[in-house]
Length: 191
Image (cartoon, rainbow, N blue to C red; front, side, top):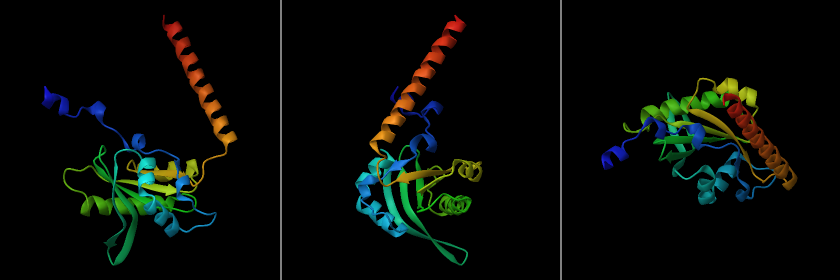
């Protein structure tokens, strides 16, 4: 019975989309208005415990500025984590500006390298997270379509204003109420 309970079932599987949120709120970094990618990375490392909590419960820190050589060129992965439930490496590439299609290509290259050189046989293929300051949903959709192991998420270095939060909560409450009402109407139609 214990062996049966320990065996994974298809419905137990989680996806990167379910495990990674968007946006990330990184107000604990205390960054000024202008900062560099290096400043962002340094602040994340300095506040690694808070960053791990923001990422989610199953992340473990592996390293930063992990070097890789492809052909005769050297590259560096900003941050490297392992996700216990996904059983895979998670590469995080930090971007100060807006997400671009070139970011997706760069991450795709990193993931292919990591899969061949850093992943152990019993692990799943690595996942890439492009953490950017801004993301145009249409550009992200077309750049990431077909790349199921790459996600782009925005980060915010400050919490939104109270009025914005209140408006978003109200919008979400109404959407939930509408879904519940629509579901009740469908149920009555079926009866």
